[in-house]
Length: 193
Image (cartoon, rainbow, N blue to C red; front, side):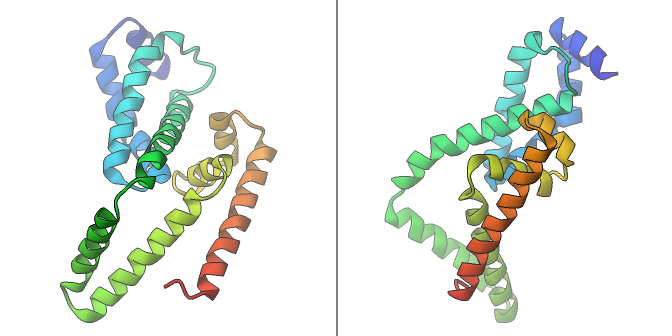
């Protein structure tokens, strides 16, 4: 089924067309959300919201862009909303919860061979540090960088998703790389790991 046929059938209320849309684009949407949220469960929850929004708003889809571009845009916006909503909640997370979480991670990585456990713990710390650095970027830089690095979208595709010029996307990604380089270099010098 072509994109135009999918949209036409969706606009006529076809459940089969919606199922085909989800089957075809679910991985793309979940991966986009995961690139922004860095948590598989949260990404899957937000992806469900994306498809619910698609179902509700398909009547207003004008087909000016590809379905995938429309889905990326919705996934990015929903992910950013999720991050904003959860920042407030995370600020009030209790100290006990934070300690329990760190202890669980530590136990997971120290339960096996000590060389492997050290390696796994260090890799986990590096990944967390990278995710924190990416999350600390200004919103547009984070979106552009994540779509480029996690979703492997071209600058032109990102410009369509973000509704910006290609040169603006290039600039955002360049600044994101510079900011990440500074943050990670500073941490490296301080021996964060």
